[in-house]
Length: 269
Length: 135
Ligand code: SF4
Ligand code: SF4
Image (cartoon, chains in turn purple, cyan):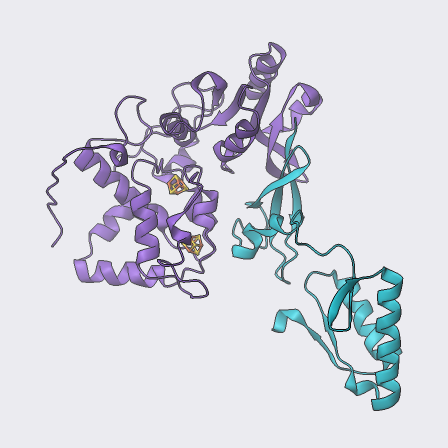
């Protein structure tokens, strides 16, 4: 924590950044906040813990308002993947973002089943091994097709259409969202079209989802949406050899133009 | 340049979900569930997620309106309160207190709801008190 505070203070004092999006402990809760030269006195309230907020989303709001300024942001492995993709999608400028890293605790890495629970560089935490294959996903894949279908339909039936999964998602930045298309998703109807609503969101997370898990944490109905997107990421890796946010090279799958032939191997399993 | 979040309680219903209002240079730009809130535990319904929208909405009523000749007209608070008080008084005198009902609100505090039922029972003399959370 002290190391993070010192790094942020230095970046601000040396004019490397104009603001730092992090978490501030206030009223006993860690809350998203921007530290700046004007409030340097509050640096001691900057905290790092296992409670996570979509800080990149806050960064987009602030940098959208101040495109000529440079901002720092606290990043974990997932957030760094997010920055990489947001740069590719032209939502941020490379010279205008300075990430300051945190390596996640092994508890958090286990909970997330994160394949890379640390960013490329960090000032807080220690590197712990990533988890290659999600057990939650394996469990669902262990079901036969009929069981799997009824499992998901039952889960999606619990949806109260709060749009929390989308609203919290640091990779959902579109101005117009298909999930609000009145011809497609009817208003005043609960649960939303099953499985159209959830599968649409899943498809739109191709090349976007950085597996932060904030969506599942925000879901008041405890729908395991993260597991669904983990599967999406697996498919994207398998068919496009693309790991979302891993590298600044390579085109995001939904941006590929031209002919692509895909063979689906296990649809009838 | 300032970006901060303000911890508050959702005003839309009686559940009392904890949320943060996101403030950028004095303007509300979003709402977020408070993840460490013991009641809502990081979840919100669609109203909570959009709670910031009504505050600065240009269509928000900021003055009382009184209907005159079938049209709503802006009025002062004194005029509005006088109109309500005299009409309620008239109804009570002509038809009795049980012709009046009080609907309280989840947007109010416990204390404000207490005061409204007190007004209903002690001043007007009716037990017709209900709450919007039952709708
Ligand atoms: S895990 Fe959920 S919130 Fe995070 S990027 Fe993927 S879809 Fe968005
Ligand atoms: S957060 Fe959960 S309940 Fe809300 S829209 Fe998403 S899946 Fe449905």
